[in-house]
Length: 261
Image 1 (cartoon, rainbow, N blue to C red):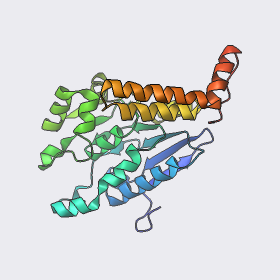
Image 2 (image 1 turned 180 degrees about the vertical axis):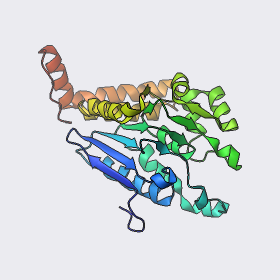
Image 3 (image 1 turned 45 degrees about the vertical axis):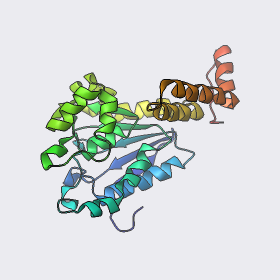
Image 4 (image 1 turned 90 degrees about the vertical axis):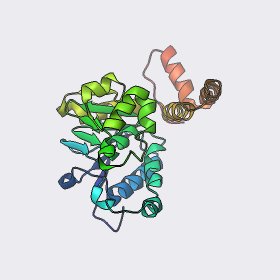
């Protein structure tokens, strides 16, 4: 944990291999300041290296996921100051985490909060969730993937509308445009995310890790190269004990026991 700041990000590990990372800065609607970013990165680096962790759920509060970046930290900053912060290294710890990451989003996910959700692999949104990239209203633009991840997720015309107007999108509309995975009642957001994570955690972790790696790595490759990457990963998994166990269990009509080997 960061020694310079009080703990504003907490993690727990459940018996089923699901880790829960919670941002806890309610007085600022979980705004991303230096401490939150640093602690998120430290938690995700630790979880990436923890063999007991099979899946991760990232959440904020019941009322707010992350309302955005902490504007007080950059209102008067110079370009060189912003460069020297190298926040991309902190975001990278989340975006490159090899474990599946599920965002449980209630309330606002705006600016950096929307970008944080888009660093995850699955987004479960409560009915009250609101997504947006309102940076343009501050004379800025998204700076942590809010233009690039968004356009890859929802296409040019919806991404342009969000980024150019700074409008907020309600959860059902976000679902319709492919911005989130599921919409549930607010009280079910975290339970549903935990259930999805537990479902994934019970599956063969080597296969899960290869699926995530190949999907993300292949998305920006030419199709032929991406398909070659997929084939090689597919072939590699035939060297795992879990693949043999999964096939045997299917043929023997019994429950498989996956060991991650």
